[in-house]
Image 1 (cartoon, rainbow, N blue to C red):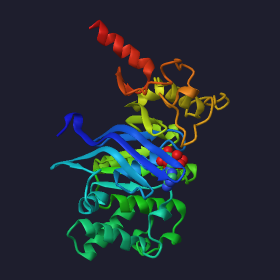
Image 2 (tube, rainbow, N blue to C red; image 1 turned 30 degrees about the horizontal axis):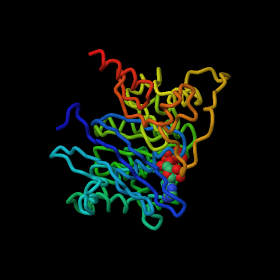
Image 3 (tube, rainbow, N blue to C red; image 1 turned 45 degrees about the horizontal axis):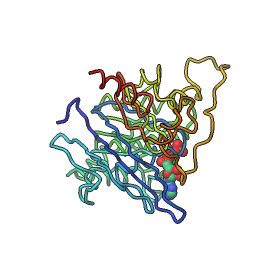
Image 4 (cartoon, helix red, strand yellow; image 1 turned 135 degrees about the vertical axis):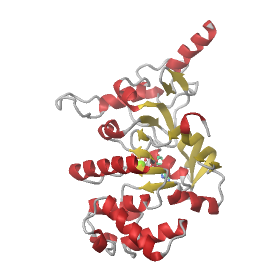
Amino acid sequence: MPADDVLLEIEDLRTHFLLDDGVVCAVDGVDLRVRRGETLAIVGESGCGKSVMARSILRLVDPPGQIEGGRITLHRQDGPVELVGADKRLLRQVRWRDIAMVFQEPMASLSLVHTIGSQIVEAVRLHENVGKAEARERAIDMLERVGIPKPRHRVDAYPFELSGGMRQRAMIAMALSCRPSLLIADEPTTALDVTTQAQILELLRDLQAEFGMAIMLITHDLGVAAQVADRMAVMYLGRVVEYGAAEQVLAAPRHPYAQALLRSMPRLGRASRTRLAAIRGMVPPPFARPDGCTFHPRCDSAMAGRCDTVTPSSVVVGDREVSCLLYDDEQQEREERR
Ligand SMILES: Nc1ncnc2c1ncn2[C@@H]1O[C@H](COP(=O)(O)OP(=O)(O)OP(=O)(O)O)[C@@H](O)[C@H]1O
Ligand SMILES: [Mg+2]
């Protein structure tokens, strides 16, 4: 088993969309680790590649998207498996049983023509050798756990018969029915009202404690990330620019983009009249990624002749990893002094 109990390891993942007009490098060299039982929040502006990265893990990217390179290693109790080159059989095994996914819009992942119960039963029986009656009991139990009232009755409901919040709960029940070691939740609460959102987050936290699973929580809401995350990865244009303990990243971000992002977002506990700073400039169009550090045209600390030509690699700065040439220099100086 790898050091510090890593469950999922992503190395230099690249997922591109080959379109007629050019190539969209949606994920362009992501390095990440998820440890057993922890919550990792993935944050970043719309379009930075959070969903494509998450879908790449379960190989759910449809053409013209394809994984161009990199490694995704799942460290199971009985040894590591590699997901980028995995065959269909292994992927079927991994989905639901090791890694389950919840999407922003549950209607996109629940079948409309089957009852909630029959969908959970099918997922359970695909992975475990249990009879129909037992799987149905498991479904009822899970629906109860996620706080759906009258689960014995609701188990026979179709998704359209449930409210948005209840559908999201049913989706979570289905995702957890095989007790995965990792739950990927892509904006699971964005479409819900604030009260339901808080309930779902609390529910995820309870279930996490109960099942000991890790959660990769994708969100553009830093308030949500602050509430639940142990660790945090900030993405910009298909790469992770800063990665570290959530509390520290939120308290003192190091990457100029992470600093700007935090300044631009409303946060819990901050006076509501405080003016939010906009990040200068625009996210460049997907076909025209800037050379060097892709954030340099918008960066107040950009160094001419360097940030526009050299692509930063990730360096360890204190308690975290940052992809920025400002810190690259620091590291180089330290190495030279040695
Ligand atoms: N099917 C597709 N075809 C072409 N480009 C795509 C496709 N899906 C995603 N992209 C592009 O990949 C990039 C990353 O998209 P992605 O959906 O991962 O962003 P995101 O970070 O999840 O954004 P959001 O916060 O809005 O959900 C974007 O530039 C997007 O336009
Ligand atoms: Mg998304």
